[in-house]
Length: 139
Image (cartoon, rainbow, N blue to C red; front, top):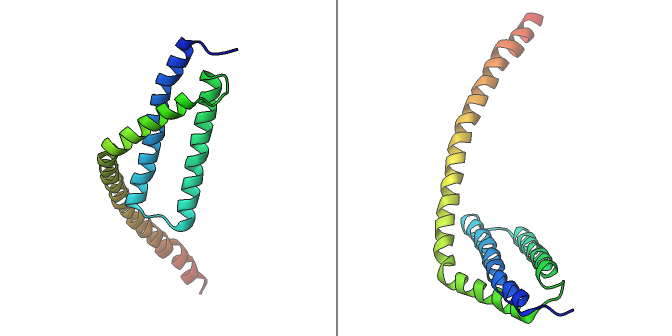
């Protein structure tokens, strides 16, 4: 059974959104890589995860919209959406996300640094009062 023109048009238009979602996922991965340059293994694992996620998204899309068949117009729509976003908005979003990720990382480091100091202080107190006291009573 062949898809109607309406179904094909709907699939074509939704493919633009899917391409945008894929590009936003790629942009988020790039922003994380800018803030913290990965090792070769992390780079490989990140790329494989990205490819697996994109493959799953495309498979689910093909099943839901085009009877499980890969259609050229869907691929073209995804590519157009991806390329337009990549060369227009993506660079600015990467800078903004990188700054946000860096800020959140610095904020969490400050918070955990304070927590770490308090834990060390509490641990030292218990060590001094409990452990050393028991040790000195035995001798």
